[in-house]
Image (tube, rainbow over all chains, first blue to last red; front, side, top):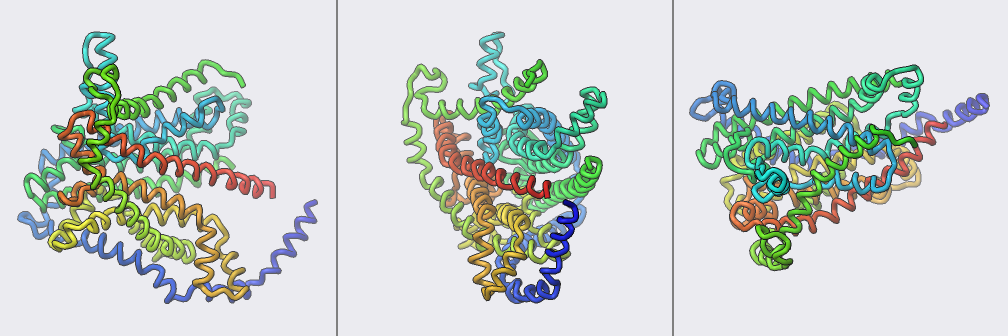
Length: 302
Length: 272
């Protein structure tokens, strides 16, 4: 049997000699054609992304405070507090979403029961709801006419309303994070090998050890990458805070008020550059880190 | 299969999470067709609010659909060739470009909008037209199209297909349009659905870029939430759901269909 494989392998390999492959390559697309293919994308990225970003950076430097404006997010107490609040909130939402979706996603992949597909479809429903709609959903849930208010009113005679403060914002961010994270968790859970788990169990590992040593490392790449996206979205989310209103000082809202109400373009630009850089840095760091765990994870599995 | 307490605890959590997502959607859909939300469903059902929304915001809704379709055309023309080059010529330059391309996703929409405003805000004919909003949407959605198409192209044996076609005498453009694009169709379709859905729902950028004459659907939504009765806001949300739901269902169906054959090839490779 193995010798047959060797013969097959031995015959198939020389049938595609390298010089023939090499001959076919020039036809793949001459440099001119490749350049032509790249042109529309290059124009879009250069004209509407690179140049505007460069202009913004210059605008900040030419502002009343010059380069110092870049550090205003650290030096100005109000901006710094807002940055911290946004960071803590985004991290909190990310962790909560990862835990909840980790449990539910794994459950949905591992078990087959009536209504499973419906539940999966419903959980991914808000995937492309704009921030404003998410904000409205929070109002429906926890606003003055919301479900939670009505239920607590009926049970305890006291209307519980928390849509319009930071708790409402947290709920809103969780609302749009769940679909993204659950999809990623389910995708990585499908790749997990149940046999590994059985092996660990048969060797006498208790449940928590199975989770810690077998399941979590397998899910990790999916959790990390979806967590990063979740974090980045929460950092930049604007529509939800905008709909819920008023006195929530997350960074995007601060940028918006600086730009529109105070016409403070240089500060708004500096703040948005800081926000963009921070988000990008987190995403990149996580991608590098996730790349490492992904390879070590498969290495450990093998 | 044994179903113990753990199973039911997990099921309960899943159902609670599901209710968390679905209850507000159902509530707002119902509120959109209720005569008076404060009195509840007993006040009766009506389509009045829906008609009112249509009278007030038909222009915004149609503008959003138009921008989404235009955005789709631009991302197709720019994104599919881009994905092809990125997959076919992997190198340091293409990797840098790929990184650059995904930046607009990582950078908050607000910052992007600010940059566009500072750069092109003075060009009056452009600033006040819907093309300005289209620009923002293209920047935001292009990475999704490229990534979706590139993923499918990377999974198929694009080189062998092209060599086969080339050995039969097909020139580059013939190969591109009759071999590569048909084979990348699942990725193109998934990317297209994604682009249209994202463009219809985009708010962060659009809110900064819009003018009173170029209001899109989500901008109108924010407007309705802020200044209209709860019923009108709900009715508007209902229209948005009706518009976006077929796209979401199509996306899920596509993902489901894509999963099955891939699984089969996986196992085939394993046994080999």
